[in-house]
Amino acid sequence: GTGFNPDVLISLTAPKLCAMDFTGKHYVGGRFLSPTLSKKYGVRMPPYIGVSQVMEISETASANGAGGAVDSLEMDYARRLAAKKVEVEHGRGQWESYGDLDTFTPGKFQIKCFNKISTKGLGRFGDEKYDVRPDGISGANAHAILLRSHKLSEEDVPKTCRAIARCGSGVNNIPVARMTELGIPVFNTPGANANAVKELVFCAMLIGSRRIVDGVNHMKELGRQGTAKERVEKDKAMFGGRELKGKTLAVIGLGNVGAQTARDAAAALGMDTVGYDPYLSVENAMKLPNDIVLTDSIKEAVEKADYISLNIPYITGEGGTHGVINKEIVDAMKDDAVLLNFARGELVDSEAMKEFLDRGDGRYISDFPDDLLWDHDNMIILPHLGASTGEAEDCAASMAADTIRDFLETGAVKNSVNFPTVSLSNRSEHTVRFTIVSHDSPGVLGHINDVFGNAGLNIVQEIAKTRGSVSYTVLDVDTTDFDSESVCFKDVQEQITMLDGVCSSRVIYGQPGTGYAKNLEGEYFV
Image 1 (spheres, rainbow, N blue to C red):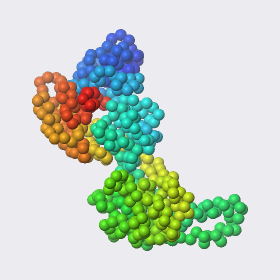
Image 2: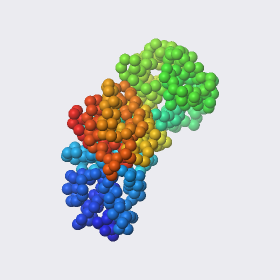
Image 3: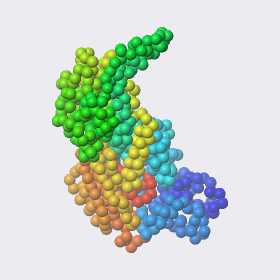
Image 4: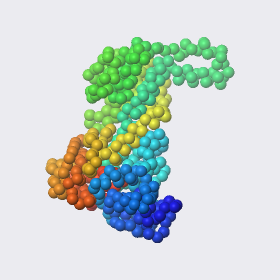
């Protein structure tokens, strides 16, 4: 900041620095500075009025030849919305309700990370619009949360949080039902670790075929005895096995992992494949081998299988998948079948599996611990290695970051476990986007449209979808028909947010971190 005239200095990304480094009369283009923060840092500035502040200061700076003080992001945004100035409310009441003022970064979306997240993935956010807080760094004002295995509690989720993404497919460490009640979408990254899990399945098939682990342990013991060299040939008969080629693999669940497993087992390993999935998608069906046999039940799929790979989600409750590999299924398996479970431990009935392992030459290999089977001679338990490759972690984190960015910047929903998939084409230059989360109740969409109509706002495109109890609406309103130089959405947003059934709303117009409002049991939070 040294060398600039304070009267024309502009800093939208670091208003605190500007406030602390200069004295006298300050014009700070801090679009997000509330009166509380202005007082905190001794900055004299007009009330918060959105982009109009940017335009007035930008014009002043340009006239005085100090355009270099305006960064390219600010100028680009100013040009795009020069025709109309957008006014939204931000920070009503005490700012302490947002979290920690000392860690609040105006002009950016704050992303809170739990667990160590791949730096390659976090790099997708960039520094211009995002303030990424790694694990262990406070994120009291988080607009979104990224996590891996951290068991998330409601206390971890601040009122400012718009979205949660897990870098992985399972979300049983997230209270999804409660987040749905709060109107917060939960995202996952299906397929990001599919190759890593598939390769581990193939590794487990080899382990289960050749008694490789037993052989390794045996050679270590011989090494301790000093007899390894003289017995390495003599003892190999103790660990005979079979080849995979020409054997039958049953794949239970033909999602991202299952479809790839079936495809490559047939193409690369020369195996026959059988599959079961009552919810097989067209996309995954296209990945399957041409000669795969699809069955109508799990029992039918496993009856002639030499290897069985479980690739289904764990679902509790009636009709769920808890203990789906039960006594009936186990009794239908071949005596020397190898069961591969890299999905969830709870899918397998441990008592039934113990009976199976006791009576024959079958194997059970998993990366989930089992209190009953852990020391069984025919059971091999690995650490939870399914997605533990650098490539899988990079891919999952990148997918999660892209999903969060798309949601925060455009309102699009993809790969959510509790919200409908929604995408609206890019908004045109002179429009402002609204997103509304509501619980499905009669007439909500009509009431929303009435609010815009009564305000004289024309909706140019709109989409609304429902999933379970959640309705999600995305719409663009035109700002070109107003004679005034600014369009104020403060009252419109409050009216919409406080409608019966509405959880939250957002105004998306190019300024990160602003435009979010919630209905907290009848209290307006903005």
